[in-house]
Image 1 (cartoon, one colour):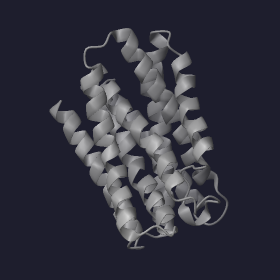
Image 2 (cartoon, one colour):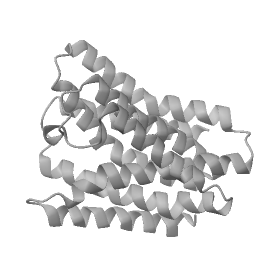
Image 3 (cartoon, helix red, strand yellow):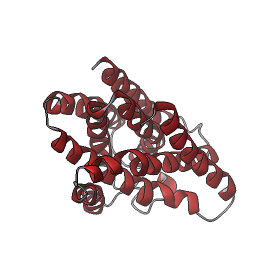
Image 4 (cartoon, rainbow, N blue to C red):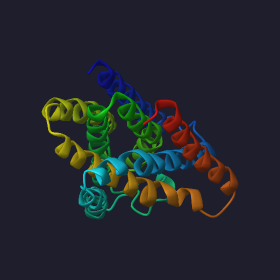
Length: 238
């Protein structure tokens, strides 16, 4: 439980710093793109290498699809995806962007707790996947909200609430699900795998393939994310 609290706190810090730095405008476009590309490689690899096999072993594959659809349909409802604010065609939808990205965050918190219940090593790998893409996602949200007419105090309040979603969803779902059966745990992990695949493939991967300068750097960052996931498999013997 202590490790889960630490993971939740670090995820909170990553999210809060992402939103905070969006107000300072000191992170250049190239760094943000490479961070997103690295996150794409790691989160896709985590979903495929570590989460999907757990669901497949227990014959809970339908939950992978349901997790994918949960995020996908939620994004369609709120007209939002994890793109960079300056290029997103919905960059002025403000609160709707907050709601759409909050789905990612809640799903991420549940994923951390579900995999932590399976094994601390798997929980750490899942936490790392959430942690790595949370900063650029939060940065994007900050850019989006700063392009609205909302009052600054309200924007900062939304930043804080958004950052708290990982700790709240991770710790509360752990307390609710800590005594569940192996079969139900496989359902949660399968659902988490689906959310990881949707976020990685639909939201993050398009940034890797975007035309223009820096494409080779983004691709190398993507490969580095995959390499870290494969390395994690060997280090933690998952």
